[in-house]
Length: 244
Image 1: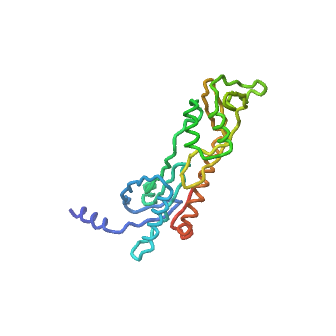
Image 2: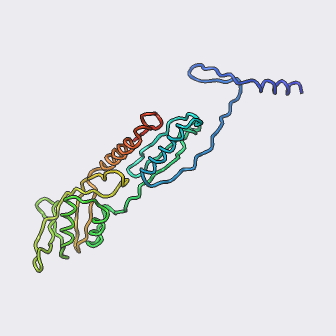
Image 3: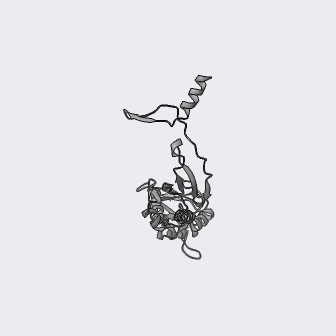
């Protein structure tokens, strides 16, 4: 009983820590206090991220708000931005408070589509460019015939298109082409990149990405610039850290 009483009294003593050889040592076991996980709020726009951060900034300026660590905004990809807190960084993780995922129209690159479907997709899922207008002119006036590959370079193609009420002429299919599909958040500029435009018999059309994924870096840069402008005060005050 005396031994148990002594152990209880010793246990009431505040732990003491010592640093030695790059490590930290204590004279009694220490247990980490874990904080509750934050439920992730799922959104679809950059504007919602901005409003959320500005709301938090207003709360932090109130008299009774306890000082906190900065919020981290991580631009994870061209279509995903995460707002993270360091509340549970001691547990080896960061709580994802908000996750914004861009809603972008789907288009199957590298797959052949019939002329009608391709025409509709090009008009509804791509911003206007000079090359887009050229492709639409070719596809819209296409005469269903065999598409021939020119043998002089192995790359260019020729197809028959209607040039009048009853006239048909051969035209060279444009290649490569510069297009601006909707591939990132609507609040920022859609990157323009190069594509290979190909056709098959029956008027089937396809475009293949040909920029090596460089558009993703440009999209992330555009997102960064947008958030940096909208949250300039929060970033300058140290409330927000913006990462790419």
